[in-house]
Amino acid sequence: MTTTSEHTVAGAVRQMSQRISQSVFDGSRLRVVLLVDVHEGAQQQFLEAYEQLCNQVASVPGHVSDQLCQSIENPSQWLITSEWESAPPFLTWVNSEEHVTMVRPLHNCVRDTRSLRFHIVRETGGPATSPQSGTRRLQTAPRIGDGVIRHALTFTVKPGSEEKVAKILADYASPEPRVDDTTRLCRTSLFMHGNRVVRAVEVRGDLLAALRHVARQPEVRAVEEAINPYLEQDRDLDDPESARVFFTRAALPAVHHVTAGQDGPEAERRALYYPARPGRGMRLAELLAQRDAAADAPDNPVLRSTIFQRDDVVVRLVDLRAGLDADPGAVLALGDRAGAAELLELLDTDALGSDAAAAGDVSARLLRLTLMDLVTDRRAPAA
Image (cartoon, rainbow, N blue to C red; front, top):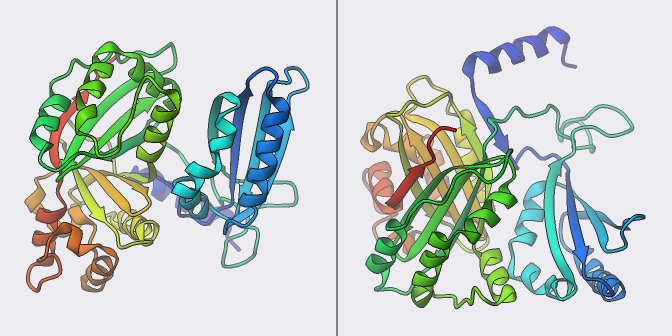
């Protein structure tokens, strides 16, 4: 049993270290809330589509239960809630091609959707228990965030077009950072690794509102249209279904974030690409998250780390207090020799290069192979 004094000491340590950590890997149960606005007259069609979807989701590993609710005030407003054993199995499913296909019938009858994900902290029946001491896996303590929401998109372009795409993505006018009274676009960072593009955004306020705001800006739309001919996955931004499917597949959610403290203007932003072996992306992201959470040494060059993961694509965005060469192992979150071996087991080394698993200085070689090229990094001016 944890005493009051132990809680006080733990709180003091957290305050002294100034570390802020957010993660999907704490084992807590997950509640997913989907707000749906159905087209007038399509309620029965929506209900039938949901019934089909519900039967399919019931067999997904990690799914516990779900409910469908209809507003008593507006019959076009619906609410779907589902419970999952933890966040990773839900994210594995929701980011899969199976999910894209499964939800297609719903989008034929809905005007708008909004998905919210919550770890369950408390519920009627008593306090949370740890996964080791019981079956009620609730979040044991509330997280203290830094007020910033992080999200990324990733897609690939046709081989040979990388230089043209990089120039297009670098040469654009930044959109107005203010979305509304409560939402502001803080930073946009663009990176490339071979023909893979990663665009990471940081937002204060409502992420969905910010993404929609950016998509409506003429300068952003012009850039999106300019890179269309070079995309490996075709899309038509004038076709809502085509655009929806593209951006659904491109979504690269943040699964872990840790901040060691406030960075100064000298902090250097870099991105690392960790392609995983088939089916091992979530485990690779979890391993990197564990390394980041444990790296609390005062001389750690990593001030801030965010891990994004979808399927077998894992990207780690880092802000560094020192250069890349100061401590390549820490920048990569390699850990000790055994940890480096486990990381190599999870990595698709063929995707990085034939010498990725060769003997020698693993950290320096992996840093060179995983490092993404910075295209542009733009911060919005202070409000």
